[in-house]
Amino acid sequence: MPKVTGQHIHVTCAIIERDELVLAAQRSDTMSLPLKWEFPGGKIRQGESPEACLIREIDEEMGVKVVIAGPLKPSTHRYPSVTVTLYPFICYLRKEEPVPLEHAALQWLPLDQLHTLDWAEADMPVLAEYCRLRR
Image (cartoon, rainbow, N blue to C red; front, side):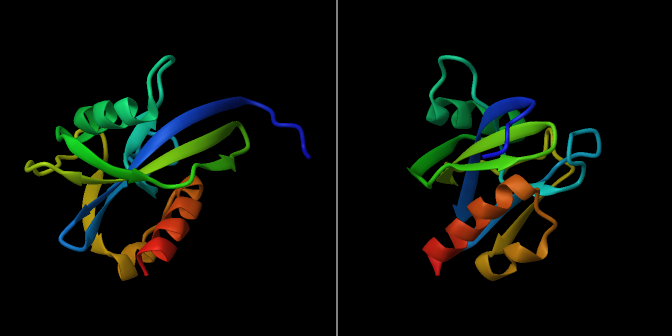
């Protein structure tokens, strides 16, 4: 196995469903991986559960509260300078409408159109597993 160099971060991500649509978030042009699409979420703080992290991050990034329906299998991706392990959760919103407080854009898409976006590489295995699960 090749030696892993650089930082290893643990990140949650929300697959938010509503009316048979899924929310995708476009990274801003000031973030790493600018303008790539992702499932929103963020870094897990020391001592924080993935679930608590996800609820906090979605509130910070989009000003909404999510309800977690269940987890998907974690996925690890190695970028040249960082390794990312994603902890995905299928979620839904309470009542609010999300606002892109940190992202360039948000888009609701049906399952069969999610693949048309330019996804961050770390999110692609999560997207594939989610699509397999929902088909």
